[in-house]
Image (cartoon, rainbow, N blue to C red):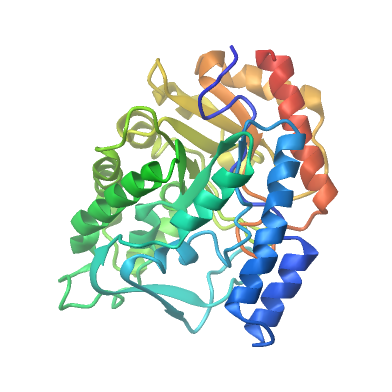
Length: 368
């Protein structure tokens, strides 16, 4: 059951705790004490180290840890044509804590041209012996996060009118990353998890979103974004319930979205969070079509440093096989370790111990 193509039996979502050098350099840059070029020099020194650590624990793919980002999503959106990040009165509300107050607005026709993250990917590719992996936010999150008046009416009459150009921009992004040598691309997505939460659905209604048709709209948007994807490029998604300083936003099992997400969206793999009972049971996995699609079970939490009992993880994998074949399953932490530059509440060594355990468990379950 060895896999030589992504997603791998032991995999990971993408972000890692920033090193002290990164934290210090970003703080100095924010205070105007060093330049953006100075910060980049530090990032260029630290990223090869995090790549090497991923290789040392036995992972078959590596990212840059998202060391160059403040947020997992805003930094990418800010590089799209006519998409702007701006200051909001308040941040996104997690359980007991708010993020930095950032929002997204559309100032003209959305496009993808010379995006800085292409260079970020190339840097990883040049410094790793394993498969370089690139993670970008899904187009659905951009739409879901738009405030009622965040779209310039001269460009689009309303928020839903952006879908065609948004998909086209992502088609160009997929093509550009492929041209840069990327064969493993991941769309990180919170929108699908929020569609599983009655509380988040109500908030979306209050923002004026047509929640009754979002699944259909998002499925079309994603599939149009992927329709020209080359056959040798794997594109996965990570469905996230929120990850900021070890807190979360949404709760609810995958049942409300499972058929649309697993059966109708043309992804190769799905990183699904299963580290707490907030995710519900494995029953929704019955909608995964038999064949080549893969579900990566996020059974190891990235929100704390405690190592889960290995027997418990194996038992849960076995439970999942009641609804999907073992050959269509893989294992990973439930999320990244630092979706924002602040990072989760655990130590660096605890982070690597978790990943080492994921690799070892995958070898025990699926073989070396």
